[in-house]
Image 1 (cartoon, rainbow, N blue to C red):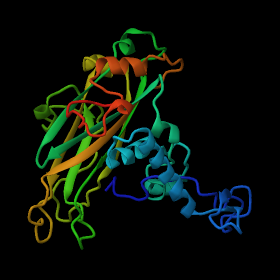
Image 2 (image 1 turned 180 degrees about the vertical axis):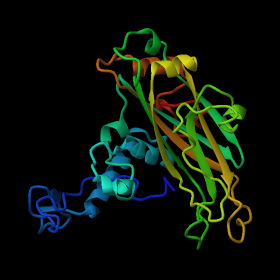
Image 3 (image 1 turned 120 degrees about the vertical axis):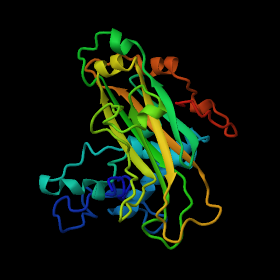
Image 4 (image 1 turned 60 degrees about the vertical axis):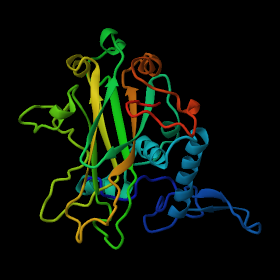
Length: 318
């Protein structure tokens, strides 16, 4: 259940236990400075998770203001994909608990809101039917394999987050989400080949980079998550071996293990959003990535998309 955890992300709400782990530092330097809605209180210091939540909501509001045509799933995926665990350290004996405590990590407002010349964030909005798989090409510019970037391994980092919409099943705490949806980034192969067992045809870019969620049927069914995230470091050999194209794949399937069965007329087509960030990780950034990604992919600036215009199924939209 690697994706089944809360919170999704974390944000600063003041530092509880900064000076002493058993003391709430609501009057000390680690506290937030707040403007109260009560005139008699005015500006006051305080700390707590109640203040972290509106900060994340504020980031969501900024995304919606800048890009009003995006779906709610895209807004959530942008926040999750921009978040990072890099600044969060856990002791080795409790390191497995990090996602249960910090989720996908601390939010990063800039990464959730913007791209720059060395980093491009792409958004894919689409729907998928029960029992189907969809494949989208991700094309990479030639300069990545032709120019001298100073190294050959780890020239790019890719992070991707999936969020999808579903109709919850009432009074079913473990199976309220009956949709198994998973995605990953594969070699430049067809959908039929990607779905073959790995021992028959190796489609994985990395042995440890498989589908984002495992939906196999077991005696005790695993709960499904509608939020998932993966990451991948890319080398020049990866690009050369796959002719500068990877495949983003997603598949969906309704569970057959719901007690009492699915409700009548339950949806069989599900909206989803995948946010994918590609960034250079070389010492001397080229300043080319953002412009070159646009040239080799079918993309469209989201500021220019009409709110009433649907995104094309095969498009990776920036």
